[in-house]
Each structure stands twice: as C-alpha cells, then as structure tokens.
Image 1 (tube, rainbow, N blue to C red):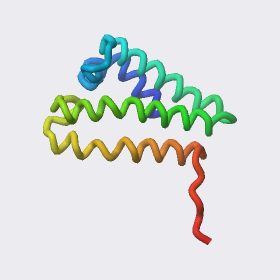
Image 2: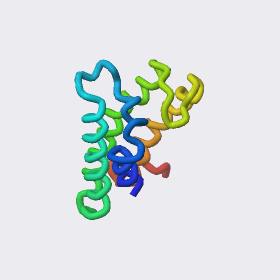
Image 3: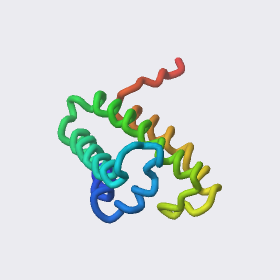
Length: 119
C-alpha cells in the first residue's frame, strides 16, 4: 500500500519534491523520471497486492528499483538539496541508511531472501 501512495505522490502532490532528488548527471528530464518512477511504484504496489503467487519475484524487482532510486537519496545528500523536510546535511545523512534497510525489509517481507535460523 505504501508503494501505491508513494507512486500517487510522484504523480500528484509530491511531484516537485521528488524532482529535487533527480541527479543532475542523469540525462533525462526530471519530471519524466519522477512520473516514470511513480508509475513503476504503482505497478509494483498493485502487483504485490494482486499477484500474490509472484510475490517473491516482485519483491526482488522492488528491491532493485529501490537500489536505483538510492542514487536520488545520495544526490540529495551530496548536493545539499532541501526536500521532504531534509534541510540539513545531518538530516540528509541520517536518511541514507534507511534505504538499505528498506531494501532488506522488502526482500524479507516478500520471502525473496531466506534468513537462516540458528539451530
């Protein structure tokens, strides 16, 4: 559900905020990147809800998507861009470790990776 809300945010009320995160080195129009990634989030979110027998594969695709968008988080930090209330280097730095945690969470919650239990 969170992916669906984030996807809609990309398309509507958070579009400008997300454009601020698109890296300058990416040779694409920032609005195109934001709208495209919004549609990808919508598709992934809806797929996780309605295509349950493919949940593990969709989880892996979602994790790969999160790896790609991590570039935007890094760009926001290194360029000192204020967006989403992250208006200091410290706040932008604190946010960075949450993306790998999010990637791990999606892989775990979709049974895309197996964590070995201690015997």
